[in-house]
Length: 188
Image (cartoon, rainbow, N blue to C red):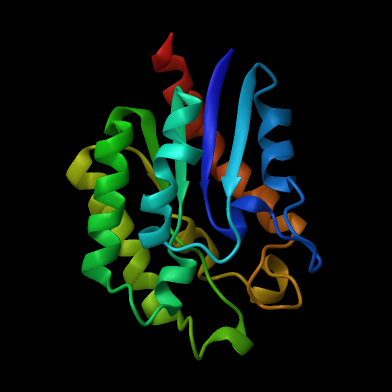
């Protein structure tokens, strides 16, 4: 069975209604790809610098066929991770995993009460940097920020203005589906 690791933060983990990981992201992907084993390695609060440290134990040890990498939201709010570090951390992940086995997803948006630490301008910069890394490594990337930027935060985000609503996860999976399908087809 084809194995896909979902590697990211709480948005990957599916934090929902204040509960720890719910698996909503994983379940929606499993519905679209029933013959694929999805392993969710989303860790609430994670940033790319910490993710690089857990890459071997959480991703490489699974010997995945593909890895979907979805970081940036916490990197944006960090006082220790700058845009160049973010770029280098993503590049390290891709090199360690093998770029042809990866798909990147840009960060999305945050709501009004989170603008102090995650301003939309900065979210856009990190999204653009994610796309630059994807272009550098010639791999597919989902521009999730571009999809989200013109939508009302109340439609995409839970009451905490950070974590995704069920509708947002459904949109995320719809956007990711063609990229994932193409990569999975190329495996065979």
